[in-house]
Length: 242
Image (cartoon, rainbow, N blue to C red):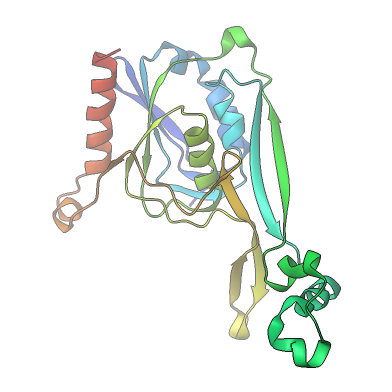
């Protein structure tokens, strides 16, 4: 899919639909900046993430427009592979006692048990002037099972900051820095290398929408979009209760 296919249009006089199709990169941030007036004027916003292929994790940069937070944090944990510490940790396994004697080196047991992790903290400084931040906007984000990688990072940030209501199918569950591996025949394998978190303590597996909606065969045959239809209903309900 081409990189620059992000677009927007009004679905109603007060509801702006933003389709972040294509690649997740800083062009998305620039696009949000370019339509700032339209977003600011809209009472409600639908952000459609379903046609994004992932790329760069820029969810926090977009969230800055809508968040009161001056600093946005993201947390990931990566397993530490240290052969020497793993070897020392093996001495804690009692099944080796007849060879190595009494158990010891307990401080290295996590390395032996593949449970040693280091936490990386990514910080985004909110440089949007406070008088330009669009706080308390009613936002619905559309999601389905094809949402993966950096597109899921976008979801995680909006979820953590409680900026949106999510409508659609559970996401695919692949938000992790992949290690690329060459496979026989010219193929390429992707292996996840980190655990990502919503906030500091909630390990991310996949995002379950607040309101689950699934496609049916009839929807496909009749070119219907039940996720968008439901998202619009939900957003209008939020605006009516505003």
